[in-house]
Length: 115
Image 1 (cartoon, one colour):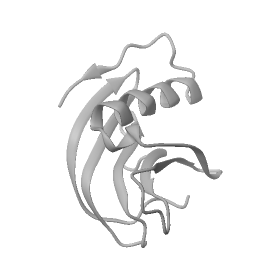
Image 2: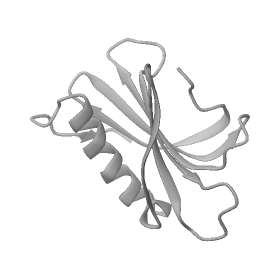
Image 3: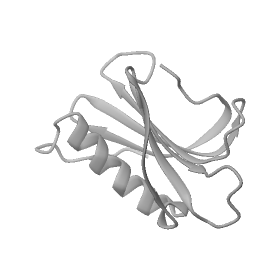
Image 4: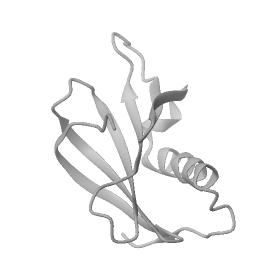
C-alpha cells in the first residue's frame, strides 16, 4: 500500500465505527512531498497498521484553497473529489466517515466520537 509519509502529526478526532477505529490527523509534517491538510487513518480491531487512509491534500501547483480527497487502500489509491470545504476539520471528517461507512459496508453503524 502506498501509505502517506507521516513524520509527525497531531490527532484531532478519534471515532469508533463498528470494529474500526478512525483517527483524523492534522498539523502534518510529511516525508513524501505531499502537503496534507488532514489524514484519516482507519484501523480494524487490534491491527497495528491502518488498512485505509483518506487524505485532504493540496493540489500540486494550486494557488487556491481547493483540496483533493484521496482514498488509499491495499489495492491502490484514487482521487475521489476536490472541494474547498475540506479545509475545515468538521467537513473533512463528516465526508470521510461517509466514505469509510460506504466502502466498508458499515451503513448500519453509528460513529462514536472518542476524542
